[in-house]
Image (cartoon, helix red, strand yellow):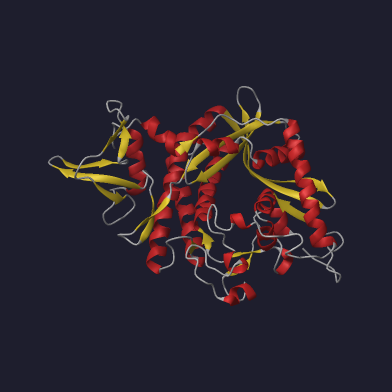
Length: 424
């Protein structure tokens, strides 16, 4: 973004926003200012260390995008194609994670970094394999894949464009109806989350983008939620572990060899609680370890789960529904879409006016803090700038970080992920 000598937006420049930026402003005005507008080029600043959850989600999206792109060309995704795609995305992840390191609880030491990167690499592979076993057949049987990762904009007027990227666009093979596809990765699932996705902003902005750019009428959005599991501290090992049955398991030695299980608790209708649990002698282990993991690693572990070789008393459908959730399609009507775009237009026009018409970057007038969100749902990455304390530890941070975020080495200029913003 180029400004003239008066601090105003230069002639011919466009104000580019996105659904993420819109929601960021709604959560905390100050975070929107820091994340999207300060710094060189008015692109905003972000922590140098990559957010562990975000980086894992990006990697899973990359892998799935590769497979969808192949299927879009009406070519079957063979086992060799799957393995090649997995290897590429795991290599990408390791490079990204080791270049700047990952940030979050349990990542402060070198040992914790090594553990976390290895674990998340295994989790990425497991989630993509899970998607391939469950979602891929459903998609190719039901839909024609029209587009993947389509970049579009919605013109909000006054030189303001809303950038949008849809994971994929499908056409039903029977009804010929158009559906947007949205892949999500999250740590857990609940009825509250299910209800929130039924009214969320993303489906509305993506429907508007497809309808206006591709002259299509989107009937609804098809979601797939891949559950990563919660990262919890293991004090004995001094690391955080993401408990997921596709990368962690249990084993027990016996006269007939080693028995394996993917879950400590399992359905048992004979018990009053409806649950059963593993007995004595079962020990937890991590599947991906080359030294003492499962022979064949994550690939063989996932295959053996789906074949029923591992813990057959746990019905596979009961297991899958907890980790790969595919709800019924969400439908939004034209009034909802138009109302949401109208609200975004008003909000972004207000921000645009304060930033690039008046040249004001006033933190107090336009971008106040929303302090209730500083520690919820997780500590904000900008706590050192706003409150002078470190995320997670809450220790007093070096004042040089707030005085010069880029020079301190803790933050860097944000790299936009929307193509139009990058080209601009």
